[in-house]
Image (cartoon, rainbow, N blue to C red; front, top):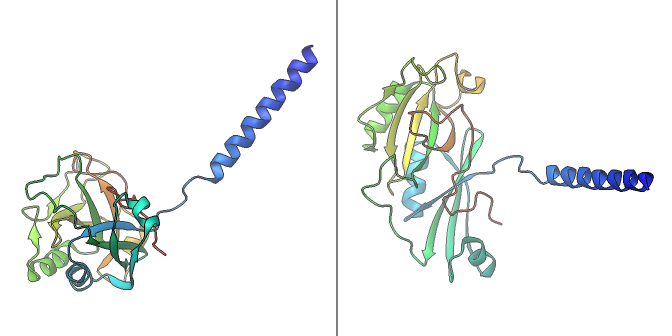
Length: 223
């Protein structure tokens, strides 16, 4: 009897091990892109490519039942533009039908739905001056240096602004002792790449990372 119990126990343990192994192989390993809904794709692409120096890689239009189920929007037709900055990508999406609601004009950083994309820059003064030349809408009063009292963020410079649809964006300059080494490499564009995160309320969202900004949108490529 004891031998049968031991055998049954080993079988259960092996099954659990196989289940854990299968579950591990199904884990997400990377983020392909960040999806952002815009009201006018041509205007948005112009802003992101000319003001923020993204490169447009592709554009497509999608529709059909598969996408209706994916987004939960019946009768939808969508234009999607894929843009690249450094080694990262965003996808700008305009719903041709049906039209969605605009961004609330009075939303703030402490609202639950607030999310933003942060773009890494080498020189805050030069990047801010460029944004001023293009007359971007400020969300911050100006660039801020995060205090040294926060050891993880002290010395980081940050500035919030908005795209033409009111989506919040941020530029960040990291001091030499913080951030990914590739963000401090000489040469290339002044704008290195981007990350995206929810605001945590303490002035900093954690170590540099690339996290999905979904907000009901799919963070993946559209075939």
